[in-house]
Length: 417
Image (cartoon, rainbow, N blue to C red; front, side, top):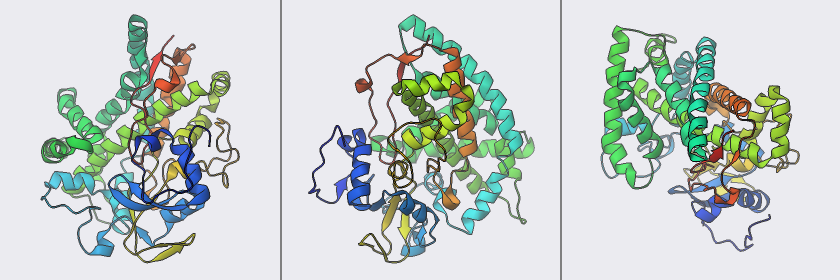
């Protein structure tokens, strides 16, 4: 485990929220897999049992003994921490969505939402992303030439999913300021000191905006996802207005955050592995397998929503109590040598590659096809348009963000040429 010394006498619970952990997570993951595959520690604000081995994570994602809805066990509310202050309905809809439900409610909601993500809609989006990337690269290239470098994350990776989601939702240009403010709040305001403003101001404002859109779409349907959610029907059931608002919140967070970070992490990983970058430049058709390897090797999502044990479970000599919070550590599982040959090697031709970058089981990411399309087009076009793409700073100057359950960077300064 080069680069970090880990004591063999760790005090539990280990705080997985620290800067030291964020900067050296893969070394810690190795220690966890080898020495404490069911590790009791603090992740975010919760003490939880963290699974780090691939097979255990797959089991957790598929085993009905683990649920997302904690009220199944507690009989109380669904939230993982006590709420002493009544939350507005909009905040509850943002926190409690399809991804915190279990079957049969989850199956019903997923079936209805899936109807809005048709192959036809994704084909249409692909053409739009192609056009969008060229426009953004022109602007980013001009800025790079004028200023010497450009932040690829803010100037390229970030606008792609924001604009795509806006257009898929059928949001007009006139409404874009309100929509973008809502996206900003959901993407950056659900942690730290900003959370109070987000819960009690930003989310109610975004909810009001979405409900206004729903009213308009009912009267004037369009060729967009929001209209699809309104019209979706299965076995005589349709989404309620609250459920539609919750789905919009979920699509904003999942569709925005994962794609921004996947493009950023993917480009950085290529720049850190010049031989693989050269191979991809020589064989552009490898972009599909390259993105899959980016998801495995440096994927942004390192855990799912918390899960809860419905009964006492013994695993690797550790007793997990009934009602305990459990997390699958996807980042650790994706480098498990029991499953992946040479897991610490970045190989864009890796096959098979059964990574858990989009989770698994009934809660596997519904937006995975869209994220893959955005990442493939964005990265392929970037490499084509910038044959001498390189980092504008020393790699050691890049700031890994301290975000439990994520692997993300604050910015990615590059030179486009």
